[in-house]
Length: 268
Image (cartoon, rainbow, N blue to C red; front, top):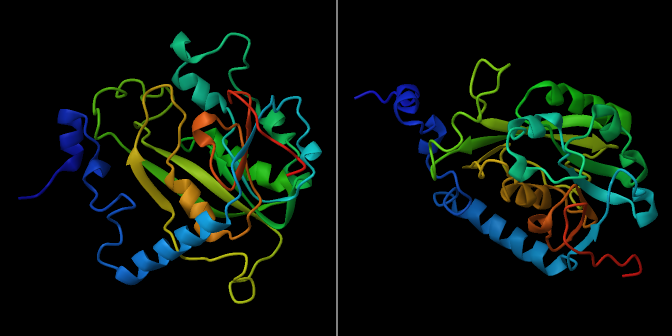
């Protein structure tokens, strides 16, 4: 019997990617014990070497990132793209009065990423579902002095509630229902696998994330991306911009205006 996952989606709202086997981190390497052991060892080392989590409630429109006094090895950025706003523009619950709903490309471009990153360094930049922001992300890398290296794709499943976001994900200018998002990886400087094994560990993870889509209005991204970053880049100076409380993580500095408190101490 031939499975027709596309027709099943039409009938039930369950996305075809819901049926991909061993998509979660716990089960993915059950049949590959050497890889499973490698990940266990890497995670243990990362945990031992991680600094306590630091976080700073700040408005990135006015806060000068250069005042942190640190050159970072990795920067993770999830800007408030207009696409994000358009998804929930009709839902006042998810918009805070007095808080800017989205940033323009020019405003994102002004972030001084070149001035706060070491060489070499990496930027992981979320750019939405593959519309205009995907091209704008590449332009941002050029402005910041980075070269695009990879495109990590988050394939969104809807196992928990197949009908909840069905109509909301139908964008008026899109032919299809968008069920994925892109995270571009940019590189600053030169790194080579043979000579820079102290800084990078390439070809450990895949470039595809498969996990359930969050509730409508949430911009939360898969936690697995942190594991990909930490497994790949061994540098310990990690910064996340536009973070929220759920993004606070050992080994990272998290900055954003939606954080509920701060513990940042530049002298630590």
